[in-house]
Each structure stands twice: as structure tokens, then as C-alpha cells.
Image 1 (cartoon, rainbow, N blue to C red):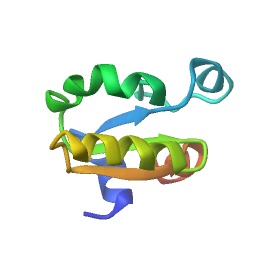
Image 2: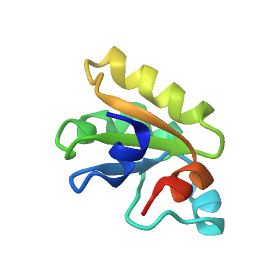
Image 3: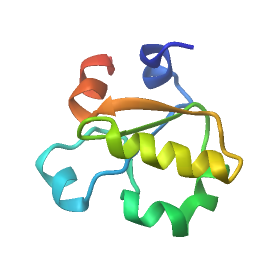
Image 4: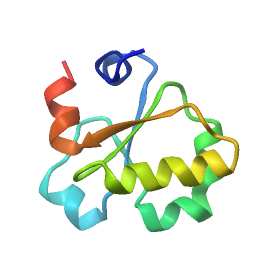
Length: 92
């Protein structure tokens, strides 16, 4: 599945790992905000989210870190959507 297909999948969960302040400046409609620093204490929430999981941040760096952490917990089916603006470009 391509990132474009994942972002537009009807069952996709878009997860924004930016801070609430960053989200307030640029919001992706329908995205769930779980800041990167909360992922270690909230990782179990990801297990019940509908798939595909698409994580994003400002540039793709923090979403990549979140995906590595989730993989260490056995959640290996997430995708890195890159930056919020990238997700918005792909979102139809």
C-alpha cells in the first residue's frame, strides 16, 4: 500500500505526534493528536486503532521515532506520513 492509499483509506487512523501548540497552528482534519512524548505511556492505544496507521509530525522525524518505539512494542504496521503538509497534499 502506498502512503497516498494509506492516507485516503476509509479505515485509516491518522496520528499527529506534534505538540498541541503545533497542531493548533496547522490541523489535519480527522487526525488524532498523540504527542511524541506521550507515545511511551499511551502506546497500547495504538493496538485498538483501525488500520492502516499513518503517523506524521512536522517533517517526518518525530513520526519516525514514534514508529520505531511502537515497533519495539510489537506494533509494526504503521506508516510514516512525513510532515503535516505532506499528509494534507495526499488527503483527498
